Image (cartoon, rainbow over all chains, first blue to last red; front, side, top):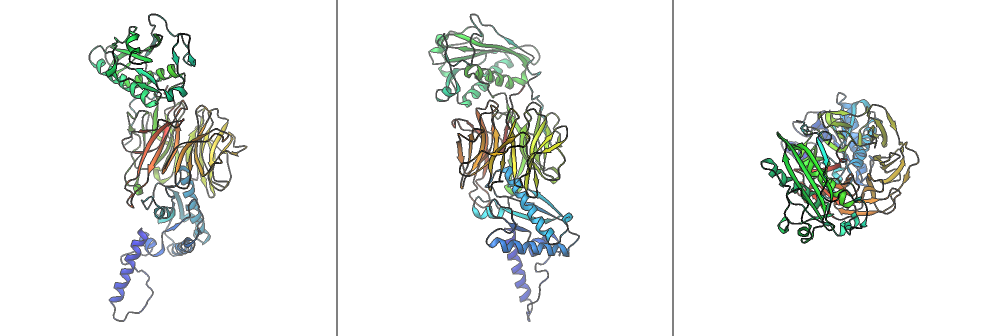
Length: 161
Length: 458
């Protein structure tokens, strides 16, 4: 949900910037959302992507279908962002959907957080900069009881600590 | 803040004295566990028969001697009536139908109780002993042969009247059915409140009949999966205090919690060993989780190392075996292994995923959660995996816990949200007889999950 809202906001901001200039030329936009401090949590969410998504009962970052490309892109951007902002440490929280038992889900979501961390470490981020936690199914981001909500809740979310 | 228990959990010291009461003619004659019909023609019912034909029992108000004792007499009879009715194995007779009267002690006129169909009659009286001390006298009568089958007096304080009512209920259950009851017990559970993305989960405890509810943690951190120590006033549970999810011990006397063991990974799914000296639990690893045995006095031993998710271990009541949940074969199934981690063997082979195995206190069954494509179910199977029976199925249910007599399970059930804001979601405790009948909602002040039934109090 957050991603979509921020995405819409970013698009509006870009259009506004374009229309303010008579001679609009495409230029690289380093910081497309106004008011966001580079290197901040908001920057990570809006311009990098703070989360990846998993298949049901799986903990591999590659996933299947459209998730594969999206997850790889997000994690690669996270690794690059962490290389740029070396003072930032992050926590990766693993989450699971409600279609599983509580204890198993905590172990499964822990595995998701660890898999995300391992990917970033393989991309050169120091392991000491990344902590992990698992919330099982106790911190869902989507509150519905349907496939769409469950897909959003099978995730690993990176946040600045 | 932490709400400490003001009342001692254990029975010791509660009942200052319990005295056997001798009835006029004959007494203590019958072993209650005898089945079928005795020489006197009175029926001693077993549980299987009581399921289809609950025992009709008359429970007149206990006779007071003025003041507080009058109210107490009504309240104690009410709690006993409620306990026996909720078991599904007794049918308390509406007091409006009573013809006979009782003075609480003397041999009743059995004809009057026979006439309204009572098979058992419970009478009692209460005397003040000065101060807040009372003496509660109770007798159980077998109406058809006209015999007293139990008579006991308890001396206690006014404040402990509920415990006395539960203890009497257990005596009636055991004398009539030949098995231990489960009324003088408590349930520890997780109280849930607030929206699910910021859910507050607190440790809570109540009597098995939902009375005396207390919140034990303040909601400042997530609390999950509590379990009772087999003999001490202690609970093992998972706590997210300081954002460090680990297994903790919670002392009911002091309200203090203390991390159990010193593990780098997340620790979860604790259960006490039957001897109460250690806790079996899981620790997450890079590849899943392993099962450890952790001594309360220190020391830890790893029992599994499968490279998969091994979680939710539970000892057999004799302490020789451990049942647990693992996805080592591809998806979640139940496995049994020796107490030292040796010889693990898969026991679940039905359709779907299996989780949260809990060994019956009798040792004869393992209760579990089964997850199919669209539904979750609570069921039981024998420890070798045979004889699987599903007791209850719904959108979501999990986490069975056994009453100490192995006859009743409690679990929790969630309803689906009907919109994207989570409206319609609920989480409630439910109990059910292991024969699959007598399903009942367990009242709690808030949403509830993760119930754990205590042993019989001592």
